[in-house]
Length: 282
Image 1: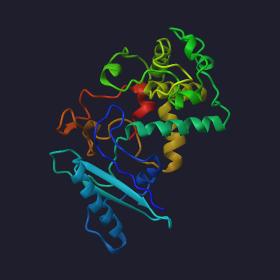
Image 2 (image 1 turned 180 degrees about the horizontal axis):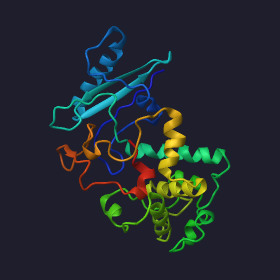
Image 3 (image 1 turned 30 degrees about the vertical axis):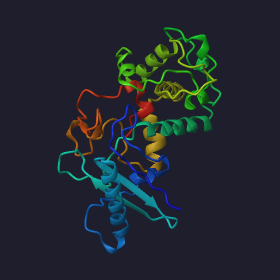
Image 4 (image 1 turned 120 degrees about the vertical axis):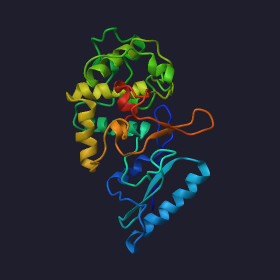
């Protein structure tokens, strides 16, 4: 069997990259694939060639993919540029922002806490946040951790610029900001009936992250490093735009109308730390 992951640097509210979470091994055994192929590296050249044709067909700046074989070998290819209009080529070892592919990572982190008995899938919002200010609305109190992770908690989506700019800018540590956001979001009317309807929600995953922080006594960032990145050998995984601060990494690109435009990683568009558990891993 083979699994392939395509990573396209196209901005969406929480999905800068299209990817399959089953292919996380791309970060474990990736090697630059734009060099001249050797007999042991012909697979990388083949994958890169395939990606070049896909990239041309769909007009995306960069693609990276890994193919895992049944014998355990992994070949990785890359095609494109780190920033549209600039000459630096993307390589397979580059870091890509994976947007909402962060969500299954957060869910896996929470599963480790469930295994340890620190949380249960049936843990309710009312149990975790009994002293919120403002208080949690009655409609949310029986919503469980499983409901939040299944997008059935009734929370608003928080997936467009208007919603992202609406909450106040909270002060304090990332953990304190996520707690404040959770209390605020849970004090507002549901956008869908909790436990009865599916509504994709970044807010639900942010609140799930806050629940994990309260249960473990550590920040979501620390928990991700210790329970996801380290065990999987994801030595270059981190948070935020990988090219932030001038790092030589791929930018995000977005398409406001019909033209793809590079998105400055140090520019105005920054994901709020309160919503990081929903989509801010690279």
